[in-house]
Amino acid sequence: MTEIEITADLVRDLLGEQHPDLAGLAIREVAGGWGNQMWRLGDELAVRMQRMDPTPELQLKERRWLPVLAPRLPLPVPTPVRFGEPSERFPKHWTVMTWVPGEPLDHGSISRGFHAADTLAGFLRALHVEAPPEAPVSTGRGGHPGNCTDDFEVFFRGVALDGIAADVRAVWDDAVAAPAWEGPPVWVHGDLHPANVVVSDGTLSGIVDFGDMLAGDPAWDLAAAWVLLPAGTASRFFDTYARADEAAIRRARGLAAMKSLFLMLMGQNGDQGLPGGKPHWGPAGRAALDRVLKGV
Image (cartoon, rainbow, N blue to C red; front, side, top):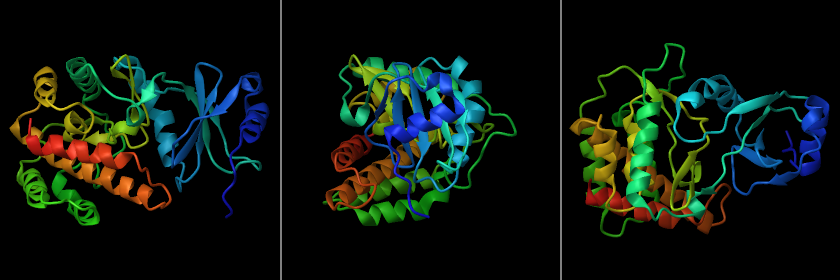
């Protein structure tokens, strides 16, 4: 099927057909996005259009669960307010959501490191509660790092590590050897990287893109201590979070190494002009990997 070009006129037409009371609001494109394309709708809303995602599963998951989770989370998250259904004009799903103000971290920075560490820890403490039996699960993401060795190897072999390969391998092997999560599956964001959090006033101010949320091992989110936070703040994060034992920290550190390699690979793809590549992710991934290698 030919990819449909998503334009402001298309977004306005779809709103006119399904939610005409919103069709008069200003519409402007949001840069970035791969699986979904975002459009600002007025000052307080956004339209999330399914683009490269092959199925609507991720959007439907957000529709189902974000209204449940959002009220108890201490940071703003995008919350669905209207549903757009597939039609002749656009045969995919789209959702009107609340807009989370701030600048994506991959285009911004954190200058108040301890504040950001405390903020992230507080958010994850609130998120990481036991998930209901019907919560989504995955065979890889959200499980023990040992379930993801194939992904790690692809990323590990795909980027140049300039003399630190053995150190990175050691961190990963230690995570794979760490005991598994023994508690009940908890709610996990699952994809905390610099493009999925927003910052303002030098600190974290919101969390976005919950398409990968699932029930699983909290270590997947604890990896953000290295992937998102500035150098020297991971120990502060774990002190404030106060629920991670040594095994969880070992798993989280290995997962942070894998996520850092992924960012580096996406940066490399961007440098080569490949679809979906993000040139500015390369330096962010390498900086995160340096933090991982320094430990907590």
